[in-house]
Image (tube, rainbow, N blue to C red; front, side):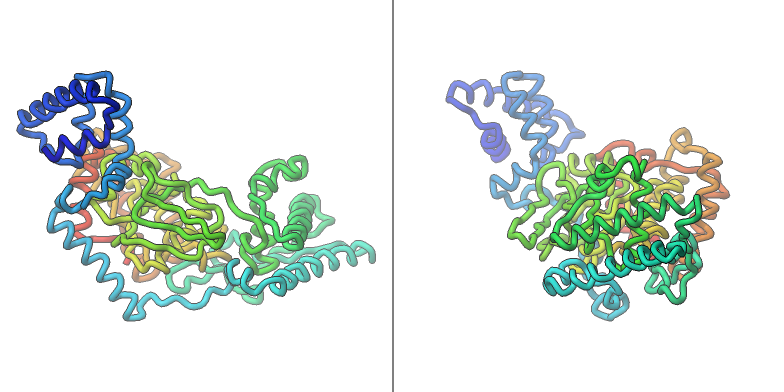
Length: 487
């Protein structure tokens, strides 16, 4: 009877005449489900009822499809007690509670206390007001003035920048990649007279002039918008990205403090509300998740009842988990994806969530070289963004799966793929990463060696071919097992 009332409430019958065929269809659907010994009729499995009703009564198909897509909104709108709707496996619930409490004890003990970041985040600049902006404007003016003086005197203008292509130019403080200081790092000198350096030099000057304008007018611009302001000179987005990175190194300031923001592509879902400085509030419980905000530094507060964070490599897996009700069945959990290699906004948001919510963060990636590199990027940071690691790297991140051992035990032989030559080269390069020569990195390095020697890789779908298998079997088993890589 309870199921019947809840379904009626969600579908919404316009008239009594509408309700009669609906009630008959519902009775038939429930009766059919109850006759199937392998199908447990629980409220969180309403998708089966949806499919049956679609076959019985096309008149209600559109409304029932809406119910299937908006499951989270359905439970929220009816003010349901989710504990009465879905009973979580006690072992899984205990493992999730352990995740939450162990992370808080770990932090309370001071094991992962982070120093003050070397670069001030943008919200500090906003609080300090015009003085901070004036300081940055003066730095830009000094650099441009030096260039003009050299040109006027007949000397060749030069720019000296820290080389961000060398791993030897980084230190590994607190298990993250950090660019050495200007006095310690090896440097690259760009000479305007050099035909090889002239284009890069000109683009840096272009970015500096735009930064001066943005800071003076207190404006922001996306990298893509900046690119279209001078397509002929920039030629491609990569040239602009390199120039922005160079300017940030010259000014020792993150790009968002200069008014240059990245375009977000990642998604986030779960029991989380994001509060912005303009007073707006973003609710992340929306069906299908929400796009990660671009203005991460404009976020003033996070509020959440989640017990851990799950970082998912691929959008397809992210959507499957949401469709399967993972926010309830594995939850309370925040699920986030960068849709492959993560953008700056996704990494920046994850870094803030980890540090401010103090939640254990688990990664779910493919058991292949690209999946492991994505995990390492989230955890340690990247070489190209080493000057921003304090704002981007999540050093407490651990890998939940997919491990190479999972591939050999769970993936069917036909689902295992041979490593390509490109895969082998990538693995070889990953093994050379200096941060893997640490106690924490040693286990990751061993895992990469085993993958290389076996010559086999696999995607997550090979281990759990259906969304139900992923949500009900693989992930709960891994969480209960608690054998994480990277801690």
